[in-house]
Amino acid sequence: MKENGTTCSLSVVMPAFNEEVAIAAMVHDVVDVLSTCTAWIEDFEVIVVNDGSHDRTGAILDTIAASQPRVRVVHHPENQGYGAALASGFAAVTKDMVFFMDSDGQFDIRELARFFPLLGAYDAVIG
Image 1 (cartoon, helix red, strand yellow):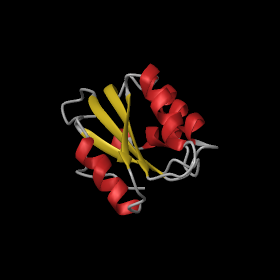
Image 2 (image 1 turned 30 degrees about the vertical axis):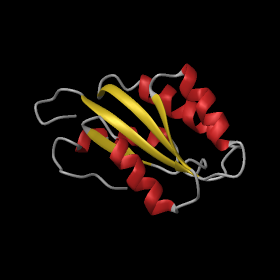
Image 3 (image 1 turned 90 degrees about the vertical axis):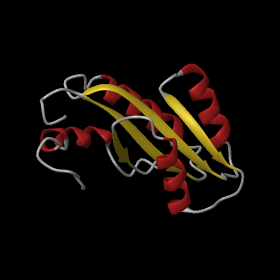
Image 4 (image 1 turned 60 degrees about the vertical axis):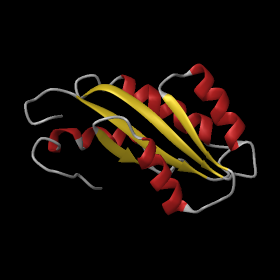
């Protein structure tokens, strides 16, 4: 939330490497949860960086992005590592605020709601 109490736009960056088993559920979950956070988020995008995956991660992401306009995919032709995947995702951001999370199911996007009340008081909220 911005200091004046209005909502913000949010970019979620998700690096992915060989995540074909979990990626579809994770991306859909992020979109579904953020779609319900209208008290805090006026608009959002999900940017998934396929970091040179050798499995079907890229193809799965392309299928999702084709049917879900809030999802964008950045493809690295070869694995460049976590830091490079984050950098590529950050470079693709178009919204006011940025959140990043792993795409392997390690984190629950629902916990992001605990961050929103803190945004008006701090420059960064990290957890």
